[in-house]
Amino acid sequence: MKIRKARKEDASAVTELLYDMLGSIARSHTAATTNEEALLRLKAFILSEKNRYSYHHITVAEVDEKVAGLMLCYEGSMLQMLYEPVKRFVRAKLNNPAWEIDIETEHEDYYIDSLCVDEAYRGKGIGTALLNVAKQEAKKRKMFLSLNVEYNNVEAKKLYQRIGFQEHKTIFIDKKPFFYMKTA
Image (cartoon, rainbow, N blue to C red; front, side):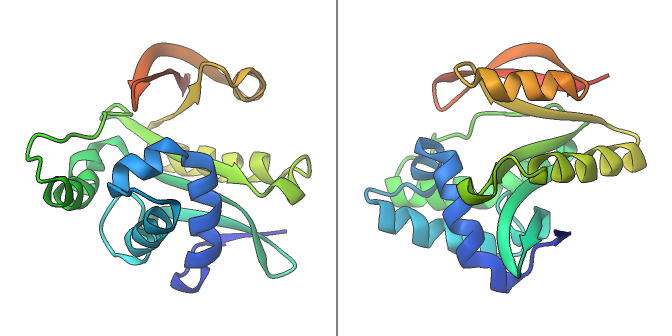
């Protein structure tokens, strides 16, 4: 397994993984009416330079030259700047200048926006390896590490608690409750 920063040529594999993980959030953040439309727009965001889904914020785990997992991270202090291109796109497409993205992290955190492992590679330590990269990066930046877990994802919550995350508060993303968890 090789852990590395994502490259533009990873966009197709990254798009598929991220879309599978994000579900309805991906549809909302692309203002898409079909899966195909959402995938195309998400890929365009991934290939772009400055937005929350940019490949610049993605770390991949590669196994046999295939993207087996990914982690999308950024500093909470960058949140507004990274959300802006997505908001502009969706507002224009929906003709709704009031459309907003839910705030998912706190200013002082290094935030794991998304972490997903291809189903074929689960249980092989890829998620843990990616989390360790995030922990090191947060430590280097002298920041808390945070992430969100859906209320119904009990196994993921247990995993994060085992490796040092603590439940901090409840937030809502796309009208669904999430545990906002942080490292101490």
